[in-house]
Image (cartoon, rainbow, N blue to C red; front, side, top):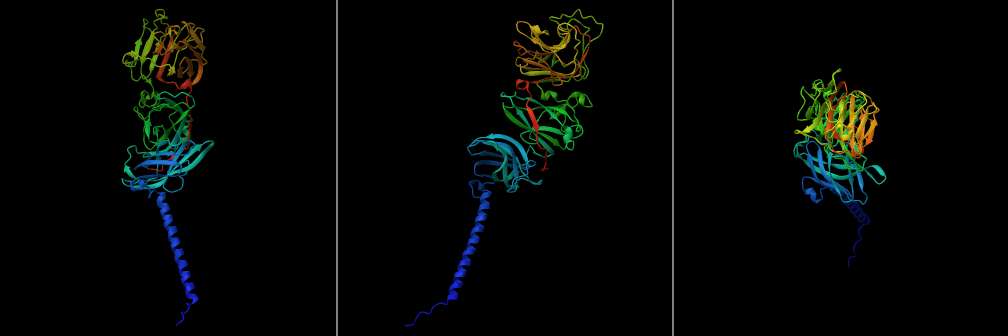
Length: 515
């Protein structure tokens, strides 16, 4: 019987070593495959949505659906959050890598308060090449800058996204735009502003002189995103890129809820956007040709710049009264005049003023609510003569006397310029004005029964009228005064809640990275 020969030990060790090396190779292969699978999963290739052209894969704690991409880089998507603590989104950003975009230059303002399970529709600006055509693919990540509880300035990735360009982007976000500045408007009152609210903005134009053209004709205001929904804006003063103060009124096209914020954008365009039809215009006297770029009628509730040489009878009723010596002249502005030396005895002070201009709509004297502001730019006549309504302007209900419903700035009982408003039982409430006659912006601000007069937006007097109601708005030049008054433009706008204009702040300038 032959004995079995023993295998040399060195052969056994070689086989064992080979097995170990093979197992190591298998392990490396598994790791590589796992990494590949992880990357594919990160970009959504193992979700149901991965089998469509577009997919948004949220990270834990977030929601993301329905991405659509335009050739201008505008990615519209629905995002939300699933944590138990609400978050307040401040800014959103899009990156074509797995790292966050640079803040704040590559983020855009997007205020949204998101509770557990709720969603919001957001518009991200993603870095697409200028040659992006239909079918161009994009993969990247979506990010938010947010506040939660007592913490603010937090940055988090929301999702990974892949999408193809499906449209050429009719809004053309960021096409033709040089840079933009987000403006946060804060309504700190518990009541909402009225619809189509007109917001006053004071812009330090010299801070943006590298982007604003010399005559301010390349600046527009938008809502939703840079070059999003255009808003009608009207420059009241300072239309220069070197001005320390440019006053602009912007019709927001909507209301701001109580104790809430709204964000609009001041866009610096590469071409002229100023015209009489908007989106940006200016007061009539600011243009080289009177009223050339005046879009005030698109911004305010009522507006007239008295263009031309005839009174616009679709805007005004005109009652000269019995005294033909009083004169109304229109010549690119309104002039109200009584020549010196003319008799004034034929005017009936109580019921028949010498000149009475009432705002009309289709021939009917208009009634504005008790939350509107009446103001004009010009030179009123406050001759300080003793007696009611030496010369006046304001709200009227078929009479110019405050005992009969008028709200006016005028000469006053004491001989000083006063704010006069209706009191109770046919009485007057009178407040002496701190401003004397001068050229500027004169205002009567109404908020319910509270009346406040302003000169150049500085309070000049205030009073409260328990009997004030919605009245026709009348600009009138009364009897008993000799002199000349002028009006360049006149408007009616909405009074903010409690008469307090919402505060606002300018964000960081963002240079356009898209063509």
